[in-house]
Image (tube, rainbow, N blue to C red; front, side):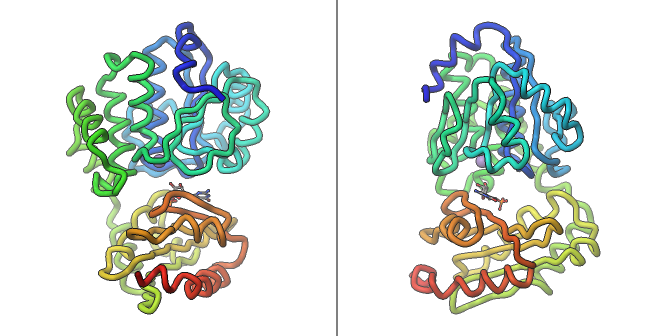
Length: 335
Ligand code: 5GP
Ligand code: MN
């Protein structure tokens, strides 16, 4: 494993490069990938961004969105690009298991693998890495990467807009513990070269459809369960719920935060029946380790206060399992 600075000589000449990220990419996954994409294009490389799945409409404004290849839509082209790549950048994830079927394709490819990530416990598939679990966002690390490559002067409006989106979304709009003085300095640079902070916030957070807003109301009024004894709030959604409100990719994003925003609630979950699998999104306040619950019980992981996982059980069984786990954490939840 080599430090990322050892990549510098390799990037001096034009390379075939693929950038990939985790399934159901969020603002940081897409923002960091497309930020890096614009930077590497400027350096004269042949670059493609390939995502393991589609991603929400509120990220489609990102500069470069039209060039993104969604693997299930173009499997053969994706596999050829990955097999032919000199360098494969893996952003915002750190284990090949995490990226579904694309993991095998990337794992088998001969290209150099570079991981840029801020999640705990990297698996170790990479040849080069820029990894910092204390970083707020992978987009922050892409900025650091440009600086380390001696290319800060190449920052432009497209790169800055993408990186700003990643940092804004992964920092909960600059309110999490991971927000540091360094991060604010990074953001100052991004705004200086053209990132339109107010506009980007609006594009990501204020562009929902009327039915999504009504769906949020439905979740909070009819679906929210509160377990006071365990300072936990839960929203469980069936496929019928999703169908009724025509809920699309990304429409459930952020809903779990409303459950967490209740006074005295320390732990919140949204559990969604996605037909092929039941997905859990877990959030916590303060010391409570959401990622520990995800890892121990739901084949998942993530950050201390924001984690996720999955279950092969039915929705109802998964909800029962989640509830049955709470007594183990009663003390931790009540500190
Ligand atoms: P979200 O709840 O927004 O889907 O995910 C929050 C965080 O949890 C992500 O940034 C990611 O770190 C982690 N996460 C979500 N789903 C999974 C999963 O299935 N496996 C692992 N290892 N981490 C996950
Ligand atoms: Mn991230």
